[in-house]
Image (cartoon, rainbow, N blue to C red; front, top):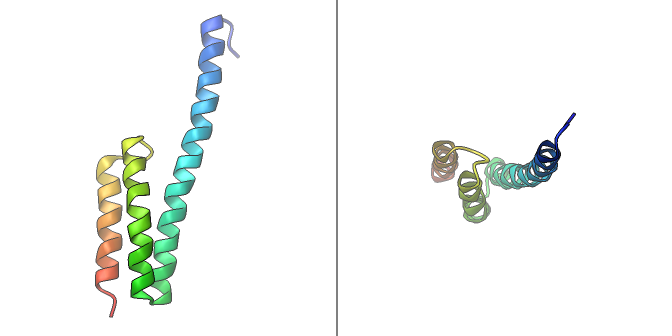
Length: 87
């Protein structure tokens, strides 16, 4: 438990930041899930559209340090490769 005024403020800031980061992480995961569902359904057009919507979310997550820059790039690359491999 915080004993100093500055530590109490830090605890409040951490609480707010955690809530924001959780929401951002959820948005990234949700957008990736939509792409994967579209790939699983076999609809290439829907998968491309979903990726087009997911890519900015993933990159924004990298900018906000939700995921690392390389992990975000890898995720987008692998999703696009899976879509490209579809019939």
